[in-house]
Length: 200
Image (cartoon, rainbow, N blue to C red; front, side, top):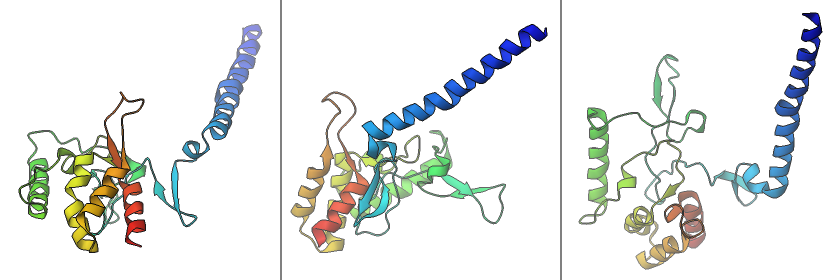
């Protein structure tokens, strides 16, 4: 038995060092060399300071900014750690709402969002991604239709001509990867940063 134990321990230590240390460190190093921005979290800088990540959505306050998809993420309730409270775009707790089509809470939330958006832009169909959450709750992108839907509100709030804001949105549309994968999309953080630049 002792003759089998020693080789087993040596093999365990060697494989742990190889697959648990050497390989992950090598891949992390190679990723940092080949894709430095992505390996560092795709951090977006403005005036040399980080303002977010192009991979994680964030809440933008006020009518002056384009809004992303609703987020269903949550965090521990400070008053009662056994409960949770809504915490939109909480990257530490990525999740969907898990509410199904028969959920009264989901129907109420979507109905309220629809009413608000219809009042904001009467007579224009509301794009579905403005009232539905993503599976992660962290989606950083919108469909071009959802971004264009918000042009009227943002232009009015900033005192900008609608065509200029519409052109800005259209300039931010990213197409399908390799022309075939995914859907056209607009990164909300990049769009809002470009909007701040346009306003200056």
